[in-house]
Length: 118
Image (cartoon, rainbow, N blue to C red; front, side):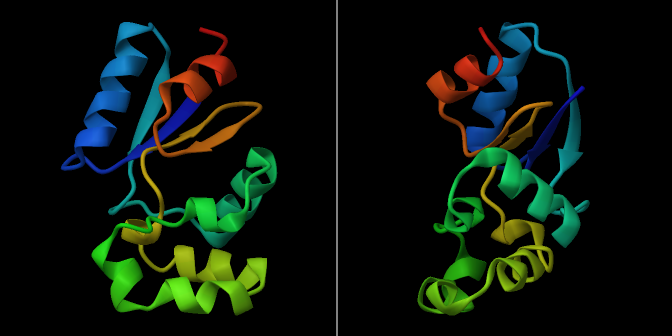
């Protein structure tokens, strides 16, 4: 089962969820703010994604800016980044789709279609 992490007040999350429904893709929905990812989950998803860890941060979020993550991130180890991301779901890029073979932070329709073979 695909795992769809989202924030209901986010317009991109709403668009992504509608895309999943329109394409008949089964998923389990998890509210990212209330049920934030653990450091271990983030480690697993990061490895599955093949992307740099910075792609898992919500760079346009207020919390990201207030914590000055942009300047701190280059000096952080992956483990430190996972620990920071796990402190608050609002730091995590959303929506986040986890499939058997991929982890896709943010909604890019072409990337999601490719990963889900749609």
